[in-house]
Image (cartoon, rainbow, N blue to C red; front, side):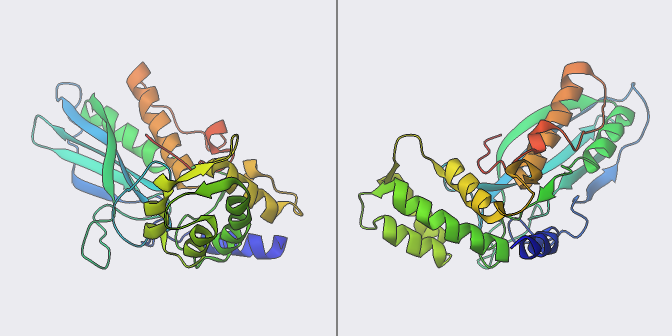
Length: 265
């Protein structure tokens, strides 16, 4: 199981959390580029958080009860007319990517305002472009990934043991939908379901991953998902806002220790 897990995780480390390939794991640039003119030029912009439902192959974010994929985008415009920006797909869907229906996968769920001169913001962008966790990446892409299939298998029993659904679909039916990759249907039924006291989705995903790696030397703390990367990037920008100084990300930050299944920026 350890060899299979290691091979699978390495294989999917460059596969989309939400469906689009990102072989660099870092994203890309946009805009015309800052002027570097110094502090006499003022710039304003945002760090934007773009999300979609994890594992789902259609656009949008449906509920905070289900894990998201999170991409971030950093951009600004200056009063001299220059602009610059970049994004971090976090091993997943890039801004503007569309599903089979032509709908844009990612929707903006939050944004943090930034300001500064072109030189300072260029330094922030350089730090942002290098900002990701050093722990092992676990994809939130498609249910076809080997490790995710193992995860769903383990999660299924947790659901049967601890979730009660009172709608047209019971817990067994919900498991069937999950195993078939019918994520939209799973999400639609969640309002009719209640966890037993002390149990929730985060615990279920943690237990499922723990069961997969329990015979290996790895622990939950050795893994991260795209949301951990997004949270680390948010910490980088918040540090700049708090201090006015750009400090490089620490890929070994505690934020990176253990999958952040649920994330509301």
